[in-house]
Image (cartoon, helix red, strand yellow):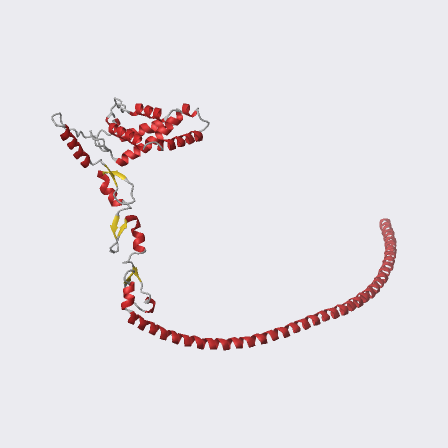
Length: 379
């Protein structure tokens, strides 16, 4: 029976087995051999599906294999009891993985191939073909048939032929790998004669490729001939007269520009001299302005001082006059108060006399009234 498997799938399962075995050996504190035997007993042969309506969907497959590996890797509470934390368990698992990777690679590859044979009933990822022939065939014919199959099996392992590539793949993936291999030599995309690795093609095309388009060094002078990196030297040799003509034209233009610059420079020098003269005048004016500012400041101080003295005198005179006027007003007010008091006293006396006379008059009128009343009664 042919034991060839899809290389990429086999490598992926072997990598997964590395993790699973590391977890089992760390959690159960057992050797790699014991962990491998435990996992083999658990996975081989595949457990038959339960008798349900969905039994067909639960048939052995690589998906069920990965689910079984995930279940084996799951951390149980009883497993954690032997470790202080999940971090400690993870450190132990990482250490076990490193130890497993130092073991011969063939061991896990063989385990992975056995699992693929058991969990791939449709032979999508492994061959499993019988290549021995019938009982009536001679041993030589059997060996020949087996050899022919191995040379033609689509799952036979192949190593990439491109220099520098260490990839391994099955024969059926050869075309896909060949179309993607970064080490494959390809004709230059710019059409030069070199064979370049796929991964270095861009660097070559944008770098040393002789067919890379470049500008002529005299492009700035007017040369518009398209050039390549490899043909630039030939172009420079063939177009030397034309380049010389362009250079002479540019030189003439430069001479005209130099003359204009010289004239502008002379004008600038004159302007600088005039500016220096103006600057000297400005400095002189600034000095005179400063002196004038000092004089005005001193005059302002003197005026303020003089105004301050005169103002003090005026304030003193005004205060003295105000005091005199206040005294005069106080005297007049006193006289007026006394006169008002005397007048009020006289008025009160006159009012008293008038009151007494009024009372007397009232009494007289009453007496006269009584007499008249008596006379009237006597009649």
